[in-house]
Amino acid sequence: MQGTGEDMTEHPVEEAVEAEEAPEKERQSFRAGDTPFGIVVTEESKRYQKGESLGSFRIVGYYGDGKTYSGATPTANHTIAADLSLLPLGTRVFIGDTVYTVEDKGSKVVGKLIDIYFDTREEAVGVTRSGAKSAEVYAAIAK
Image 1 (cartoon, rainbow, N blue to C red):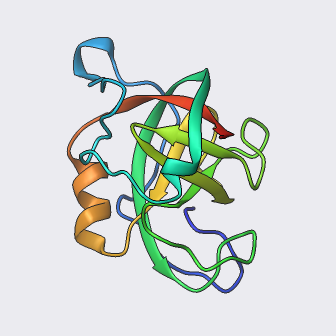
Image 2: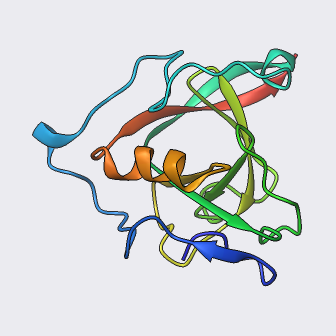
């Protein structure tokens, strides 16, 4: 379940989000600087530099109302849900040239899967339904 904050009104974009890897021939990869939905450089991103690679993660999208698991209001180009055993709350990571902060979790967000928050259903569906995507994820280090 994406967006599992108790106050969050969920709007999942697919019935079940699986953490299983897509077959190699179906998986798309993105170069550094790209994200599955384009290049987005935020002001926050300019305050960080890429650290070590945390590996390749499957990328999906979600949207909703209310608060995240951390209690924060979700923000596009900022909030992600992740497996908290791999990326604890508050962890900042680069996906492409955008810095995201882990502020949410989901019951189906397990393993190397990141669920990116979007403002609209259309954006979330566009990422999730356009096929299995993977992106290299990097630690974000303050400059």
